[in-house]
Length: 152
Image (cartoon, rainbow, N blue to C red; front, top):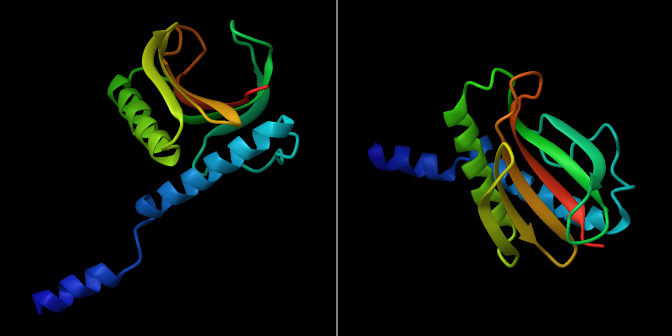
């Protein structure tokens, strides 16, 4: 009986959490491909990466080059700014997921930045940043966000 139960468990489809990793990677890869033309083809009402809280187009201004088109995706937010363990856990979880999705990408981080920590990856088409922001004392929530920016 135990063998049948074990066999039955092995034949069941993957749980949603396991399947979401594939959907996350597919969404991240699609965002990287759309970076080439400035994210102009991103539908305004569609979230490319499943499970995101907010998605917006913007501009990333680096010290080392020109302004670049960017897609900013919030994957976790805590308006109370009290759940520091959950914020840290989400940051590390997403860092592992991004690294798994981009095995050949050059990586950097995590490094301390203003109000938080940031890790980054670079592919041939895009720069990807994962940022943990502790928020401020007034209106900005603590959050974890992914930014995909074009390389040119």
